[in-house]
Amino acid sequence: MSANSKAILETPGKMVFEDCDRPAPGPDEVLVQIARVGMCGSDIHGFKSGPYIPPQPGQEVGLGHEPAGIIADVGENVTDLKVGDRVCLEPGVPCYRCEFCLAGHYNVCPNVDFMATAPNYKGAFAKFITHPAHLTFKLPDSMSLDEGALVEPASVATHAVQMAGNLLGKTAVVLGGGAVGLMVSMVAKMAGARAIVVVDIQERRLEKARELGATAAFSGSDPDVAAKIKDIVGQYGADVVFETAGAIPTVKLGLNVVKRRGKFMIVGTVPGEAPISFLAINREVTMQTVFRYCNSYPTTIELIRSGALDASAIVDKHFDYEDIQEAFEVAANHADTFTKAVVVVDSSLS
Image 1 (cartoon, rainbow, N blue to C red):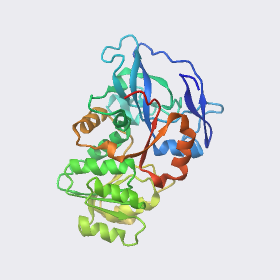
Image 2: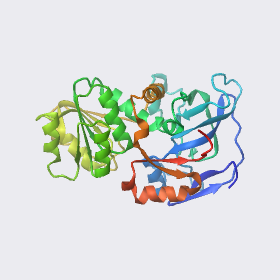
Image 3: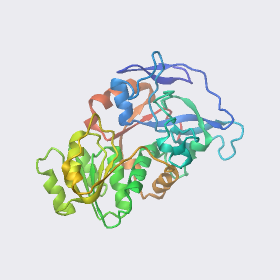
Image 4: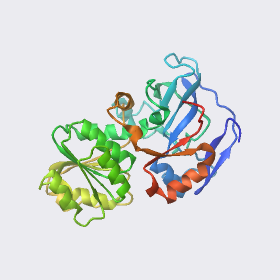
């Protein structure tokens, strides 16, 4: 493996290393030496089945979109970052010209070039990558590179909670105790929610939710889970429900435990067609889908820097870059053994 290698998905289920030239940054870009990359559920899906959006025949596919590293070079016009800066990268590059970008909602830009997906499938599992400087954020000295790799999923949580509106004194249910769900529960608590219930089918995740401050955590496989939730949030249900698991059973459960005129925030990627229950229709429930994040990185970085959001608490597994095939096999086949894994691309960087 050369010093400038990258890991690519040769076929579903098989990652390989490819030697490549060290890229050079363009006029408004930086070159980042990658140190850490978080493993996302979408990466694991891509490893097992290929990307959600199929690539063109013969197109190279990279995985990974949660990187942190060190600035190795800067392009012309870049003045606010310098070689040696520790950074994290916001992985989506919008067009900045469509009506959504111009309205300030660049996260739903139809032309966005997002890491590890269409149109370019450039993944973060690489020794070096180039990236626009304005989407590269310097990390405070007190933040670790592990925490830098968590800014991306944490930004999903901060964006979801912001979209839910005022949570002060309200009740919230988080369906799914994975990385995003746990961070949603933490951010919702910071936002003033008086009671937060987390639901998952893995006891290890439920224990972690309680440890991180959830009022209660229940198994989704419990036939009485809806009643137990209402014992905590009140007989009419929760003010806000966050679906983060991306599963039809949790959508159905969420519709049963959201309050009349409450909000149902769909954060996870739900496969297939999720039915809308009549229980939601006749209760004036607001259903809101949440896609990635928008202008969330600065806020998220400050929450982690200040200690208000203990993002690193969810990381319980590390893999070496050289073992990336094993990392994905473990993530794909033994997901119940850890909550969040980070790949250490370069252990010499800190």
